[in-house]
Picture 1: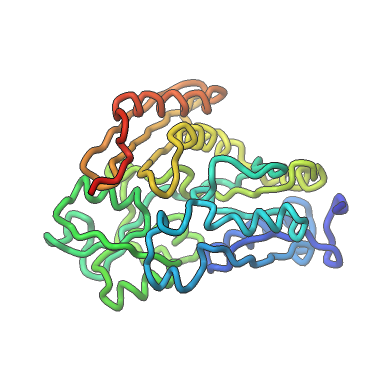
Picture 2: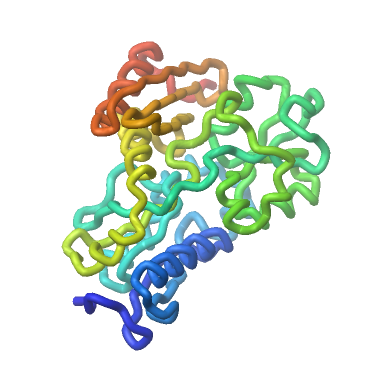
Length: 319
């Protein structure tokens, strides 16, 4: 079992994907832990784990995620390493996380949430409205594609995968005239200038848990739990409780276009949600407010309300 406090000789091992953004998130976690406990940075070690979702051939081929698997594409191998004890904690982008964790693992630590908004990225247009009719827009996010198809059905939407750097190269190569990234990721990479602008949630509601970092641990590892408690952000946890309950009740996956955002207003949580047909032909949205302590119940209730309006087969692919 891990010592109560890690040392440079016996560091706490944090598992993560190997993309520049994933590494930035893991290093931020290390820095926060070191500062919170007055420990040297060397008491924390970042361990890179290759996941199925990072497969270069799949990225280059721009294969849709629904053809490869679900959100576990970006987490499965990391969680397996955590279960085996190869690492002590796993650092995740929460929008990639399935709503259920494998047995023996627990997500109960979140860093303060970053900017939740989507970023519009284009070398040719200043905004979605400025895109010419028939413009090619690339995105691997079914949620973003459905939202865009709903609002601008004239645009041509293509699959567009890879990390921030890969997607920027694809834009430069003319694969598409525009794409979307998360403002949170650009901020963490110091690449804010890449965005032509941030898209207001009123125009495009973000993905559930966008901008949030979660740290997963073994549920029986109480020494690590005590370490993580010092960097846990309660308000982020409250917001994600509503959003992830909403997603879970909708059985959200990479094949279901779902958006959701919770904000705190005093002692209340304000949750907005949206579901769309995969082709963007229909969108159903709603919102709810209630005490923070009821966040998860509010998420489930909003999901039930939207599903009741959607009817059977709403998420089914046409054609």
